[in-house]
Amino acid sequence: MKISLRAAVVAAGATLLAGLLAGTGQASAAPQLSLTRDGSAGVVFVQTDATDGNAVAVYDRGVDGALTPAGTYATGGLGGQLGGSVVDHLASQGSLAYDRANGLLYAVNAGSNTITVFSVRGDRLTRRQIISSGGYFPVSIAFHGGALYVLDARDGGAVQGYVRIGDALVEIPAWHRALGLNAAQTPEFTSTPGQVAFSPDGSKLVVTTKGNGDDIDVFGVGRFGRLSAAPVVTPDAGNLPFAVSFDASGHLAVAEPGANAVATYTLNADGTLTLVDRSATGQRGTCWIVTDGSTLFASNAGSGTLSGYADDGSGTLLSTGDTATDAGTVDAAVTHDGRYLYVQTGAAGVVDGYRVGADGSLTATGSVTVPDAVGAEGIAAS
Image (cartoon, rainbow, N blue to C red; front, side):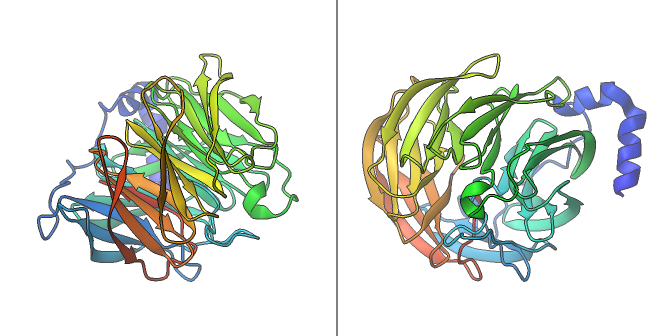
């Protein structure tokens, strides 16, 4: 299948690629996002990252935000664990990515160097493809239009690009970029890259290096998804840039566990970054960050808390306070309407749910324990 799809891309040429990346080419069947078996309000997907067989656990979301198990689906690959990691074995953000517009879910299999593609119909998943990640130990996925990039953490780090055709990915060898990090640096969990992310307009691809360089790398993205030959590198010395999100105006928001802080940057047209603000959380292990469009939420693994910051689009960070979670607060996801936040807590494999108030306050809606998910990372929500 992989060979025939690649041949099809070559035969179709640049015109077809342009159509696909603009969303006008071949598309997957229209996603049926509301067909949950009990008529629930939405779905939450949680990756187990189990080393003996990775899987995605699916939960129906009730109108009150409570989660109910709706099935578990094997990815056909293996989870992995970086040396030195405790509550987050991938030490990354974005290892599970939900393409709501096309009804697809992408999962990394760090232990087998592959990506799994699922089609989504309500709370039911169908495995469509398992494809090489193009490197070693994939930890993060980002997509924009018909282009997708995966971040491989080991062997010095790399990003590999793909084109989506229908429900499948086609690897594009020319879209591979090695990061050139020190592969021998230890401990692994702070010395491997943390996330790959597209800018909101798709013109830039951002990679965080954590303690292996303390840099934020920004690649330019060409018309068809091809990256610039090398990134623009912005030093973030001593801060261990880990995970990123974007505020309401497109400022880059970065979780920095080295400083236990959140920083915001203007992402300039040439790929350079200009610091706007930095705020210490006063917590420990500030590694992950998400936004609902009006509030930024940073996960503090060492403190078991979430730190909130009002997001008015200016890049200025105004604290809305801290909220307690279960132990080992890691990756988080916000529902598409911004009303609910779900966060993985890796110490016991628990997912905590919260209703998001108009002022950014969080009200607990309950918790679930995900089987085989201690130390897991990877969560998405509809």
